[in-house]
Image (cartoon, rainbow, N blue to C red):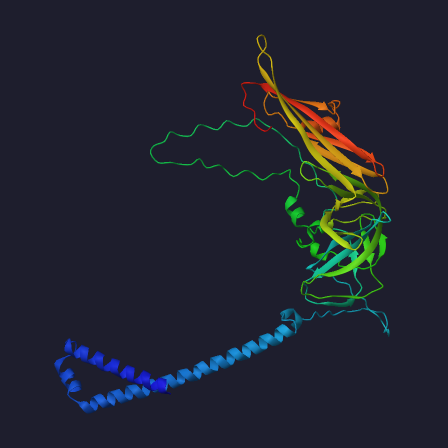
Length: 460
């Protein structure tokens, strides 16, 4: 209330100043100015009326502001209630289906089973790979992560997972003729006349012989987690658990009858187990000692099940210890995949650069050359109680100049057109060997680099 009085006094003073300034500037006719300025009672009445009107306006303004605050509080309360019960307008919707049956006679106790397709549902494969070091065995737990954002939640349902992909065409695309032609010569650009112009390139015609890559890129794909859906991918089946497996002509189906699952329509993932798969294991220990003096264990596993493992993320465990996360490719029955198990402490490696020797060659008759001889020793030892298959990789320089020659001394150069020769062309030297328990071996590596003395060679 006091604020209103202060506002009224300030408004009256402003009004008086405005009237005085207007009269002094001569903006009003003389008779009007005399009539207003010479009557004190008129001034009082005018000020009283203005103050009364302003006070009433301020009161009405306060009433409106209070109403707005009350409505904001009510809106906040309603929003909180919606948030507590799910906060989604989908909870207010309900699908109603009307079924009309034409029967020759009235029947009692008729059960009608309704099947329908829903969208915005997907599943993705996810795995737990567990290796038992003491037994030398491994198991893969095959899981499905299901989520959906449809109009209804799925409370206590039996989930069925299918690997079918209805968005992919049932037959391969047709190959159209692939033609080549002489590219027409473009005319030279016109001479510059002072203003710069850019040659506009006509838009290229669409590739008529292309595969339908646009649709394929958005088709339901377990590798990408099943998030991107074409018009039909929303019809892909949802989840399953320790499941009964049935195999069709081109897909697998997992049905989980032993347990009911609830999948909300808020997009939160629900993880269920489809199967526990036995795999055949072969261990290899790989080292690149020039970079790190450690062997890393790699498990090569063979899928012994009768169904395909779909692409998906995997958590890797050795015993009860979590090691890493990786990605599994699509693995058909009897196919293999590789999983890294981290550093192996019971297979060791040491790397020593022995010497780098330089010698000058040539003289009066031939041109003078420089020969660099580099020697390395790699020592590996198996401290395990069983034999170990090890792979050691090192590198030699790769010449980038015709006058620079790199020659292997130890081990001798491999035969041409072999895998070892192809790798050596890329500068890689690979040693594979089996080490018995407690066995230690030394791997000598020696090579020479020869070049004319006039060349300033870098990289050695």
